[in-house]
Image 1 (cartoon, rainbow, N blue to C red):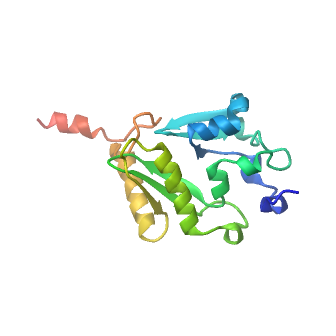
Image 2: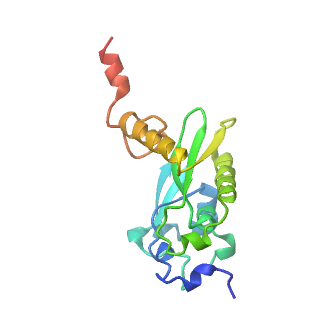
Length: 180
């Protein structure tokens, strides 16, 4: 018998049945999805992989229940909290939030401190040598910081990983070269 509380979900586990972008380390991906990689879409985001089931299908590990529950990835263990954003720079900044569509999120949400520690541990595993890792909760002042960082990344590319598949709106380097 599984100790998975989600088996009694009133919305039929849409988080697993419509697996949409989650962040994994490459090691987690290989361990959990390596043999079904052809059923997954992956996009690099710095040292992370953004992963989802092709065509927003069910997680390939979902067969009416999670078949890898005891070995599930960190982001699944973290749920109904989630890793929000990842920023690169002198330090790696990760955000964590509880704004997921889980109908039981208030009941299932574990300790914010535990979630922050889990995200920090994953960040440390993936950070460059010597790069500090900081985790920001997306609530209160942390929400403001993360919103500001997202704006700077979108406009100017600050905190963007080189392998990210998006580009800033304003090419600041080109603007500065043009003023000389």
